[in-house]
Length: 271
Image 1 (cartoon, rainbow, N blue to C red):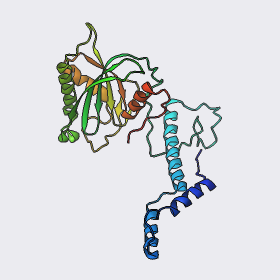
Image 2 (cartoon, rainbow, N blue to C red):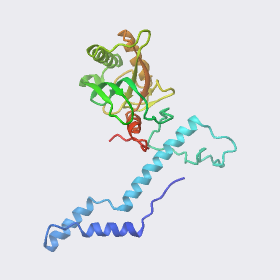
Image 3 (cartoon, helix red, strand yellow):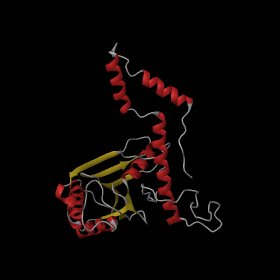
């Protein structure tokens, strides 16, 4: 099921109006200069038809990515209404040709109610910084209280060894917890939410296998391994009363955090 863009008369009028308005405010210009200016502007102008084409190409790539997910998670039954002799469509009717956008299940199966309360320890591993937070939620009608600390990740760690990275994270968590005198109730541990801003395949909510490093990182011994498991081991070596209860991509985290305050949230995006 491939979508194709359509350009309406309204789109053409909008583009024409924009083209004719580009000299407003300049006053009279020599014909030759105005012509060259128009050519220069057109070289950097994306008209409505092209914008629609780009948008639909992006949507088609998402559909291709979703078709791979559905093949892995929901095998098509023999009587699938979308099956044909060539097997070119999956259970949802999506084309199954390879795309360029990987689509990984997040296992976030619901939305926050806005009534969740409590104190939570979070760790956000980005491209240049590590952020650790102690977050207090009261309800949707009140702003969360966030006590945070940002740690600069040493540049040479980004091309180092796995143990070096996870030890740095565990040491940072230990410093944060000690500075704030955070202690779990007797016989319990502090639950930790881990935001991991890299493509990982998850079989469970607290598990994720790194597919490939991005953002210029190339740390050995992590790709193809469970990143939550590796950090969990580093935390245990420090004998910290902490356990990772959830691993989440930063885009998913942004969506869920927004939905806590705005129930009309439908998508998360990191730019």
